[in-house]
Image (cartoon, rainbow, N blue to C red):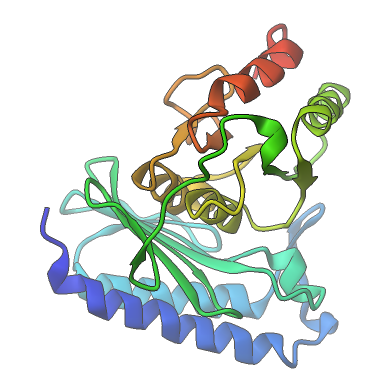
Length: 267
């Protein structure tokens, strides 16, 4: 599918939204924090950035649907659906930690065909188009070459809501620590996936994520030569809210670690 007619305008839209986010980040006050639920914060920056992205994307492809973090979803009238996370890493953002991202993916008939993850502070724009590879600021990227987990870093995240198998999750983390070179918890799933795509990380796993957290990043990983699955190795990682993304070479090793702790759990 030819997306060249929207590509440059979409890049400008994302970068412009990133400029707004950084400007607000530089003088953000914690008294502007609000909560959608227990331990689920958001800010006016999330809401405004999402509206900027939605308005721009709707102009690029009118009648498209939307799956968003901050506002209600909208059904597609033309087969196209945008999946948007305006600020992935809100907790970092509101705490003054300069590690957050903007994630925009485009699906056609439920297949992700285009994905952007933008790191506004560093101005790193990760892009992937199905069948055409992945880039960082226009330069091709690829996953880490390491064949063993102990050669590279792995990232994870801790879900904000309480879940019944927390003890088993901590055991997975312990097992990964024992086999990987190191474990990181950076705070933006979209950027974790982008880092897997460009080889900074050899793997990333997390549970209880939403489509807007992973849609763009997952395409980045696969187009950069990596592999993305659910925790049982199946393809339905997005709807099942669990993800394992690796450079491909360490995927089976990480799957075995996760399966050993979750085989008896209904997840």
